[in-house]
Length: 63
Image (cartoon, rainbow, N blue to C red; front, side, top):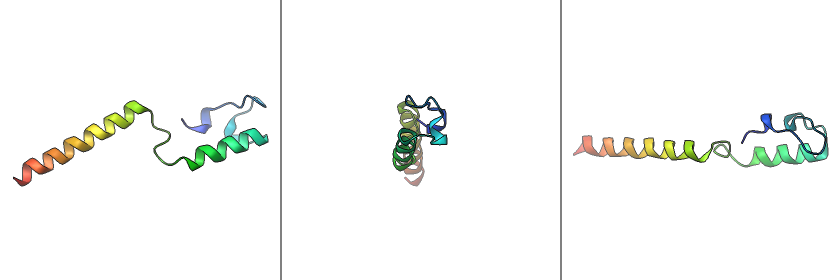
């Protein structure tokens, strides 16, 4: 999940603005999770399926 759509339960402001300590802590935690943390599980499965298909196609062409 991306933090630009989250609303803080402590101050009711968007988390990406970082108005309170809770917002700032949540924003820092979400930024440290990595590039694939924002993808939902279905997107990850689709990405994996495309990768497997590409490897299979490449292996088929080299034989």
